[in-house]
Amino acid sequence: MTRTVTLVLVEPDGTVLGQAEPFEADVPWWQEVGGFGRDVQVLRLLGADLPAPPGGHVTYLAEVTGGFPGQINPTSPYEVGPHPLRAAYAEVGGPAASIEWATALAPGTTAQQKRTWNLSAIWRLDDKDGHPVAWLKQVPRFFAHEAYALRMVAAVAPHLVPELIADGEHGRMLLAHAPGEDRYGAGPELCAEIAAAFHPIQAHFAADPALLAGIPDARLEVAPFARVAEPHYATIPGLQRLIDDLPARFAAIAECGLPDTLVHGDLHPGNARTDDQGRLTIMDWGDCTYGNPVFDILRLTDGRTGGFAPHDETLAAWADRWKQTVPGCDPLRAAELMRPVAPLRSALIYATFLENIEPSEWPYHAADVPERLAAAVAETIP
Image (cartoon, rainbow, N blue to C red; front, side, top):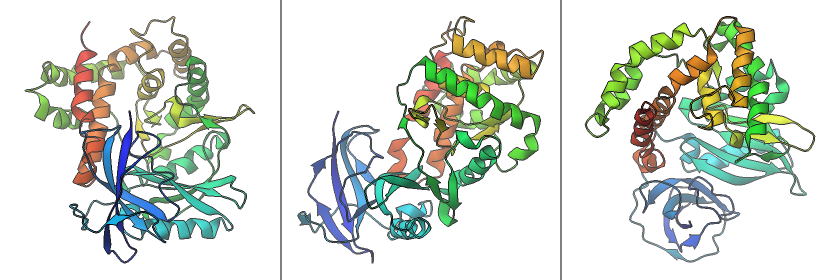
């Protein structure tokens, strides 16, 4: 699958120059914008010919901070005016201001744009020899708690999170470079390592939940799930029954005795880095909440547990740790009950994104809401 890119170019004073000639990107994922040009900063998505990523023909607004070497068509059909939900880094001048802030804290570095979309913008800061020194990450308002979360976890397990060098206004964070590689597609051995490393963190905050006061509260309540699901009752058979049964399901989950605690929210191998020294770093804490720890183990095992049979080593080890931490609890029963709730929670998260981003970027998430609601119903079918 390929992605063809068209850039609508704008100058730092806001003047729209027009459209550049289309080109083929190296990867199909829409948020990946590295290598689009040394003097080009991609601001945001303007449109796409597919309803959802990846691939297709994608158009972005990009600020030209120097000379543009290619041909420019001086007309463009896209509206590039203001929007109240736009992130600061997606505004004209936003990337330049953030890079200036970061390079002042890391002198002698240059910033290379790597990613931008409605959930974050990321630049790598390299030294004069091209070696990575730090990362500039900027997040929208609804992820403003990420810097707080990094400090909070670092106070307990500093080795497990990237070092937060500084944070600033408009969701800016300067993070020390974490050695190693992102582990997308890693197998059960790494998943087991992540689960084992994360358990002491969750046990710590379960024992002192007052420390989570700055983290979004996602403890189980029916109303948020019902609000997101109701518009889809007519098109997704079985969804209303699932929602109607949630009070009884949530009561049964509570009876399992697992305490609410810090939930990473997107705990999968791709959000972990490892190196040849055995160091493990868990990345991307913007989705973290105060809620049920089952969500993380379900995300980490990603369906491999099937019916949650005890022979699944990762899940069984996770359950044993919680039994030792909270004697008398029933983690495997909680995981079984939570199976349809996990995709419901994903639908709720995607719906929240849509409520907080401008319409031109809805294609990133719009298809995910009904897909996850349908997946929740599928989890209730024997």
